[in-house]
Amino acid sequence: MVHPTAIVDPHAELSDGVVVGPYAVIGPNVRLGPGTSIGAHCVLEGYTTIGADCQIFTGAVIGSIPQDLKYDGEKSELMIGDRNRIREYVTINPGTTGGGGKTVIGSDCLLMAYAHVAHDCRVGNHVVIANSAALAGHILIEDRAIVGGLVGIHQFVRVGTLAMVGGCSRVVQDIPPYSTCVGYPAQVFGLNSEGWRRVGMSEEAKERLHRAFRTLFHSKLSMSNALQHVVQTIPSCPEVEHLLAFIRQSKRGVCRA
Image (cartoon, rainbow, N blue to C red; front, side, top):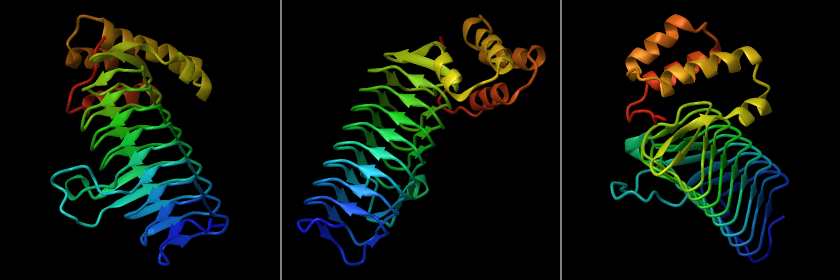
């Protein structure tokens, strides 16, 4: 179902059940999965692949060239999974050669109005990015993270799984998994207990994460000594192991309390 005012390049691939609204523009290298709907005045271009049952609302611009002065017209991709809701006037750019040539967004995400996802970002599944939040290039957002409204995230920063970043925060260092962070710059404020409840985290894992966070973020130990202390004193579980690995792999440093 393509509205007569829409412009769809004959080389674009539209699967069964795709709906294209008034005045939308779809370029030649765009592929749309079954059941995906494109709202009025949207622009989809570049080497962009969008999965099944996505909803893209009015005025979104998906796949336009990266806002990077080093970009020189090379082929790069944007991959978007299934069942995503991309609200009004969201902008998402493909990758660059310097970042692997690909921007990836998982499935079951909600990108609220005016959010921006820049080149070479990797966004996981079940992620929420609220209104007017801006992700600079090369950012990693792990599964089930929530980024609040008007948040700005610096290049190469990582946001851990089940983390929540409070509105209007300035994020210049990695946000640890399972935490809540807020501030200018962002600091660890507490634990995302509501997120834990939603995913049905076990009481054992919660207790061990509480102990780990007290050592890592509320003690006077250096981070290296705190990591060692957690390994020695807290029984292992997948959640604690992920938290420790995330911190060890940090290149920009991790937000502290």
